[in-house]
Image (cartoon, rainbow, N blue to C red):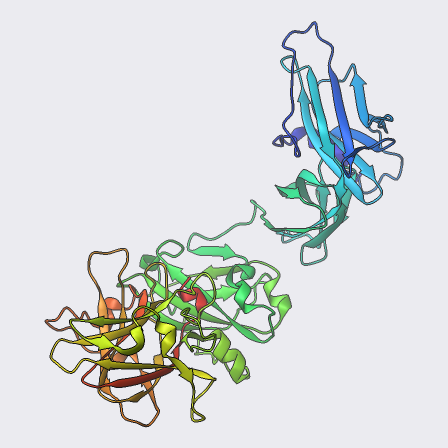
Length: 511
């Protein structure tokens, strides 16, 4: 990479502000000599004899020249932790202080308007780590990744992955360079913090050609925290909306869609719901190994000659527990003994018991619903269940047991079923509805009756009632507006409820 640094004069880079404190600049005439003054502290005490090195902020370390680096300025702090450099050159510079495994990096600019840079509160911190992925050019087996203004450069692996160990704390600019022709691939900035690993994600290559009807994205964008630790093979879900996909350019059934990995290999998937009336679709994507998620994927559509790909059984071979974790959501189980539902934060809303139209509940469950939690009998799952004793035997009287399941409306078109365990006396009605973002209470319901035997009620979308004069809108209208799950009970005296679960969706459908 001979003459590597000379190429950098042709590349414009943004300038970064100093990282740990605001700086004071002074001087606006050419009569004032340039100067900087910086005081460094270590664990709250002035840091004497700390090494510093100054380089232009555009500087990138050379990988082939083994000679000593020609620093613009270098030296050590004095006994009081100060660095004074008088007669400083004009330009934008980076100063790096290092002491063992501690560091701090700062940027400053001196010119005809700003002749001085002063900072009296720079603090050494334990070094951090920076990692990421470079969008490699098709012709390159690897790339170089450098911290600008600091004599640090690393080589990516063949997938474009890199790790910079002992990165200095503060604001840094990381740039990637093609190993073949030394052209710039891209760059990004980050704040390196003490003893922390910063993931820069993908450093995109602007020269990559993306077809008109295509999107590139990182598979990691589909991996939520609740899915970790990952086990393979697994299934990831890609949700398509009018914000990220042009339904008008694709076939009406999505048969022209193709998904490719970073090596231009087809990735198997199944279409789990495709509806152009609401511009919503979902792809379940089979992923065999972690290596398949490292490089960007490309989704393409719009080829009128494309033949429909045979259906892929993406769930084959996965354990029942993994399928359940990836393809269902537990709404209520009462195991914690609190009035919070079974969903994780930020979806762990309160559940409630509310009598309506002169109906009543015992033990003031409308005030303290946890009074209704009882030990479960041996015929169902878990240790707790909810028991509601009520009076609602006249027309129009009912008791509502429910919880919010989402902060805003979501499309749950791919819902397979709602499972509820019930026993007791009287009638019940399961509702999926919305009570936010609209003046209209969209809802769809399923009616049934209970007896003294525990019954697993599995409700499919086709089981929900059709629209009627009571403003029950039906599944087709309500499916993309659902924010709440409720059970109405009436014409009886007791209801036991446990283990409410939705199948065919996952937590990301509600977030």
